[in-house]
Each structure stands twice: as structure tokens, then as C-alpha cells.
Length: 261
Ligand SMILES: [Zn+2]
Image (tube, rainbow, N blue to C red; front, side, top):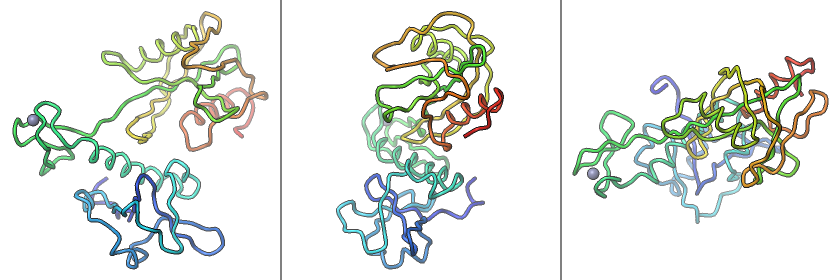
């Protein structure tokens, strides 16, 4: 990836990404020339050259024609490629801000000269960016899809089940455990579908399909507010198209005779 792509001139202001307004309601990421008037407000960043982002003081007022936005809300504005490239910067930026001292001996870390890592000058421990794998799984029972609501979901929104991989587990074992824990069901035929980085702040989503083989829905109430089996023509509100969970739901719809919405 490195070296072959022109860096996106991303500007972060606190946790927001700056957008440039163009005419009637159109917004885009800045181009290099847009940054000239901001120059005095941008801080150099140790990783700027490698990853192509700048920092603006979160307390500095925004000049006319700029807006700060939560990256998660910018899928439609940025398009898929720019969204995930900006996400990569977001992920690395979070890492560079949170992994600053050696977890083993407490010494301040230095950037590794060659790898994307930090190294402890005292004990030599290497610290790589954290990536946390999590599974998503669409479970089908006789033409109906299992959808559930977490307590933190937007009102009315349902999605496929999800959960973080635990130490010592294979991804398939995580699928079986999460389905059992969250809704009390058994599944079979667990098949990998696709993966997607979700760098808020450091997840990697791994999508699976599976078939119900036993049990009736029994909610794990601390995690799941509601769950049910849904026919293709009768789905509740589902996640937007940026997400891998939506791709899994769209695959279910394509297979069961209803075009993706
Ligand atoms: Zn150390």
C-alpha cells in the first residue's frame, strides 16, 4: 500500500476530520492546496510523512468553509476507498496517541526505524498497532434471518450478531460461543464470507454465515435487548450499506428472493 498511493491530506481536529465545503452543500476532503491558509494552525505530527495526516489544535476556531465531522458519519461523503484510507489513519493515530510508554518497563517508546512499530529503548520490547478481531454472523433458520438489537443501537435498528474473539479461540469457535451466549442457539455450517477493517478504534470485522441447528431464542439480557427471526419481506431497520453486517444481510436477501434494499 505504502509508496504507491498519494497520501490523503487528512486533517484531524480532536477526533473530528475536517471537510472542505464546496458550493451548495457539497463537501469533500481537503486537497493539498486547500491547506495553505490553515498552515499556521496545523501541527507537525511524528507520523505525518508516513501516513499523511495533520493535526489542528482542537481549541482553534475553524476558518470559513470548513467543518469538522465524526469519520463514522462520512461514508456517503467520502466513498468507500477514501473512507477506509481515512480509517487507517484514524486507527494509526489512535495507536500513536495511546501506546507511548513501554508496557513492560514504563520507558517512553521510540518509533521503530523500519517497521510500523514502536520500540522500547531500555528493554527492547516491540509494540505493534493493536488490531482486535471480531466476528459477525448471519444465522438462517428455514428462510428466516436472525436479527438482534444491542442496548446501544440507534432506536429501531437490528443487525446480525457480533462479538470479539477471545484469547485461544479460532474464529469459528467465536461464532459458536457468541451465538450460544447471546441468544442460546446452536449453529452448523459456519462459512467465512468477507472481512472489513472497522478502525473505531481498532477492530477487524470478520463476517460469517451459519445455519440454525437447535435451540430457541433466549436473550442474554445484559447484551441483547431483543432478537427474532425475520422473513426477507419483513425486515426491521438494518445497518447502512457501509457495514459488513449490511453486506451479510444483503446476501441473505439476494438468496431468499428479495433484492437488497
Ligand atoms: Zn521496556
